[in-house]
Length: 304
Ligand code: BG6
Image 1 (tube, rainbow, N blue to C red):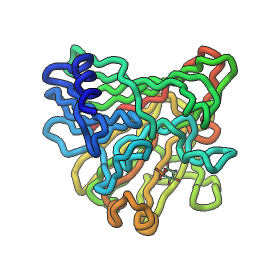
Image 2: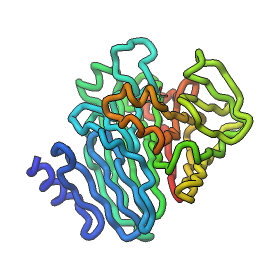
Image 3: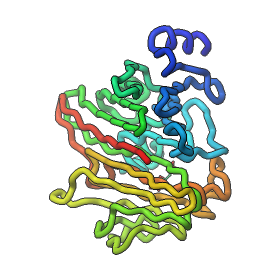
C-alpha cells in the first residue's frame, strides 16, 4: 500500500494542492487543499468523502459509522452509483446501485486550474469482474473539480459494439443542522415516484419539508427536462446549499428517518437528523441508451 501511495504521489501529486495518502483502513485517498477549499476523495468508488470551502462548515455529511473496507460501499459523501440505480432490474442478487461505488478507480490525471481550483480525473474500464455483473465494454471517467464550488462529472462511454443502457446517480449526502429546520426548493410542480407508497406517482405542490422517511424519485418529462437547480435552505446552520445538475432528468430525495437508520449498521441511530440526500440521477425511464462509441455525461455542481 505504501508503495502504491508513493507511486501515485510521484506521478500525480500537485505541490501545495493535492497529495495521495493512506486513508481509513489503509485505503488510498486523495487530499486536496488549495486555498479555496479542502476535499478528500477515496479511490475506492471514486468516492468524495469531504468538501469544505475555506471558512465554511463541511458541505457533505459522512456517517461516523461508515465502513472503509475494500469492496464495501462507504456511507455518506458522494457515492457514484453506476451502471444501474437501485436494485438490479432482473437479478436481485446483483449489488444494489451497481458496482462503481465499490470498485477501485485508476487515477488518469491531476491539474491545477488558472482560477486556483484543483482537478482530479479518475477512470474505470471493464474487467472480468465487471463483466460478471454487467457484460459490456465501457469506459467511465469521473472528473472532480474542487474550488469554491465542487463540480463532479461522470462520463460513460460505450467502447463495445452493442448499444448499452446506463443508469446511475451522484448520490450526494448533504450535512444539515436539523432535518426539521430545512426545506428544499427546485422541485415544485414536479411529479415523483413515491418508493414508500407502492411507487405511486404524486405531485410536489410546495417546497419539500421532511418530517418522516422519504424515498422519492422526481422526474421531468422529456420536454420539460433542462438543466436544473435544487437548493437546501437551512435555518439552523443559516446557509443555503445549491445543486446544479446537467445530463439528468431525475432527482432522488432520500432520508431514512429513525427506524431505517437504526436498521443500518453503518448509520448512527440519530444520524438521519443531520443529513439529506439529493441525488442527481439517471433513474427509472431516465436511463441512457448509448450506441457504440457514444458518451453521456451526468454532472452536478455543489456550492454555498
Ligand atoms: C437511495 C434509494 O438512492 O439510496 C433508497 O432511493 C436507498 O431506496 C438509499 O435506501 C440507500 O441505498 P444504500 O444501498 O446505499 O443503502
